[in-house]
Length: 87
Image (cartoon, rainbow, N blue to C red; front, top):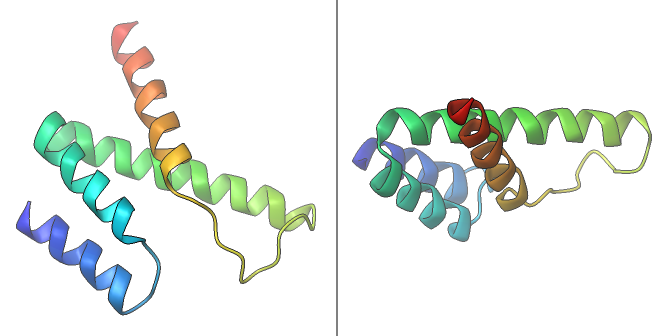
């Protein structure tokens, strides 16, 4: 958990890639869901966000320097993984 928190803080302060709210949400996920499940949710959320950014960039609906909120993608990843685990 300390490693995850440290990496997220580094991404926030050095690269401005993650907001503080996202950091606290991800830390809460790790505390609530456990390491494996939370890691899967975070990775799938980043994949969803990356695919969405590629589509928006290719359609010229978003500029290259624009930012996307991470929370909707994190929530979507959680829902998708929960449904897949239920099946």
